Image 1 (cartoon, rainbow, N blue to C red):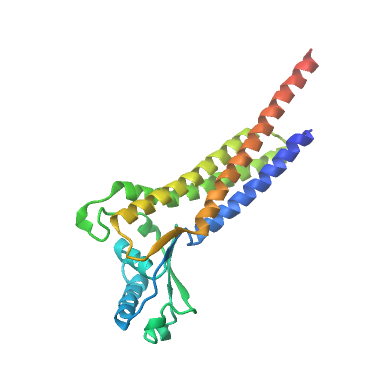
Image 2: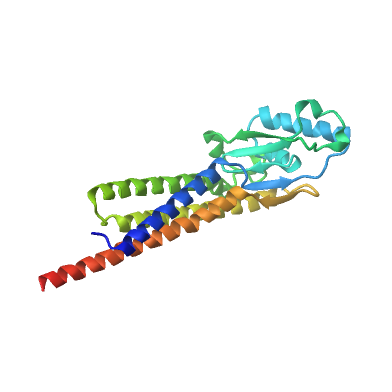
Length: 256
């Protein structure tokens, strides 16, 4: 028999866990972690240059400097698995360049492949002879591995919880709480790695004049999911510890 206090704590923990997992999943699958605001382009020569950058971005080989420069110049957004730019429709590239960007902009995206996620970062982006930047390389790898680890921990916790419900036992609750705590820490570490990586990128690749960068809503979703997982963990650990202490007291009372 489960006390009403413990049952309430478990229900609230489940709701928090579901919310956190949904937020984290949306954050992983969207590209609005960091976004750039580029100035209005004037002049046909500048439009031609941007068209060339866009073509290289969409069809060229993976190169950090190339896609970074394109993101800087074309109101780009970048996430864990996607990089996107805002461009006018194909028919409007060469028409009225003074009005670029056009109100009817299209979001064109390319995903980071698994191989590209493990591609080394260099001290000078685009210059393979400058030597590998180990710090940026491992920050980049951590920022896409850690959220997957977080989701894996939550799925494992859910499977253990489902089995515990079938067995009508609160014994695994403490372990489930620890898994949620680890998931929250992994998500928090993801955000920290991402911010550190973007800061280091901007140190080696200076932003062009009048180009501003800002955090996007996808990053905030991930940031919100971390404390939600931790709150769920706190409730689960409290319920497990309190129920265990109450069980031992009742057992001692019956023996006495």
